[in-house]
Length: 404
Image (cartoon, rainbow, N blue to C red; front, top):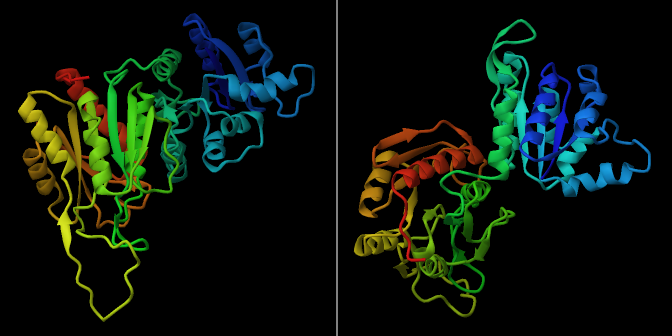
């Protein structure tokens, strides 16, 4: 595989040489991309000697190979690694600034991106840097956390570039996922459902689909074969094996139940309507009096039905439910986990302005067979990582049985 190693201007740049060597020992081809400041720490000729490729240092470099190296690289690389990633380059990436070749390459490529931050410990903890890290994580960027110890500036703390072996191992995990989800069939539901009243009006909720999409994307990055069943949402879906668009609870019920027996994991992250009009009108209902009476029917409880089927058959996919609550959040989630025979339940307080529906962040409690764990407010991408970690742990302990 072809990997681009981006080197920005930090003292850890010398470690990037060993990152390149480690990748080559794993059988990868490497092309180096250096910022102008990076060349102050390590000479481009060093990377050129070990990669046997021209090192890209200038966004506007001319020459016979400029077209290949400066344009085609974005579409030909299998992975972009940035090590070290300074606070400066993180800010550029997070905010779409493309004023050198490395930041331009990040915007142009559709390959996965792995970032190894390195900077002063105070800088790493700064709110601006944390915000940039969250923004990148929300777009699917993966990270190799910096180490702790003596820094070049003389401070002691977190901020030292991860060791080359750690970065190489992380790159292998991105390219060749080896965890329990690899090749597992995972179904994720996301977004709201709309229950039509007439051709113009519907009953719905404020779910955006962000949480479900983040889970589907993270599962796919871990090597799972993901089916995403999505209700109405304006978001662009992550790359998955199968995307199924639905509108109503009945349609989502049919899509999930028709596929569940072949799945190893089902994650019900969608906000499915509990009730729907019993007789939707074929024509727009005209405006009438000051009040309207509408008769509703209960929609199918998809997760509860999956749980009953699993109990009856003695096997089936691992089941994960979501509980959007406004009070007694954890207690309600724990009760639902028991009654619906689910393995995990993710509870969140949707009355909070900074969590739940319609925002990029979430604060959840994961309720499992061994108790509950509360996660702090963070990006939904990071919440998805935590949820998938718990799912992988359960799959390792109790592999799912499918009929597929």
